[in-house]
Amino acid sequence: MADDPELNRRIAEFLLYQNEIASRVVNAALTKDARAMNAAARELADHNTAHQDLADDIVKYKANAGIVPTGTEPPAEQAKARRTRKPRP
Image 1 (cartoon, rainbow, N blue to C red):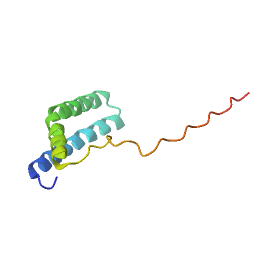
Image 2: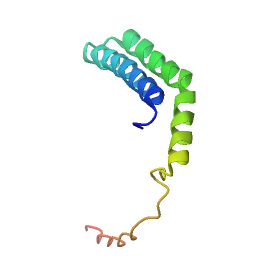
Image 3: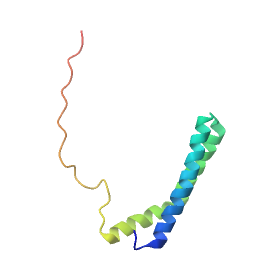
């Protein structure tokens, strides 16, 4: 996304604040502060919801750049079926 500095800036700001909130969730969990952990988790969810337009803009950028979204490629090959174990007596 080197050709879209505004999108890069928005992504960087989003990730920076998301990491700050996530560290508060972790710190609250480590200190077993359920109230702070729930508040930080709620803030993280609100932050993600508030920036849904950023996710949409990334999808549009990738579509315009011809970048195939991950997870849309067919699987390379099917995994072999595993043998079932014999039940123990």
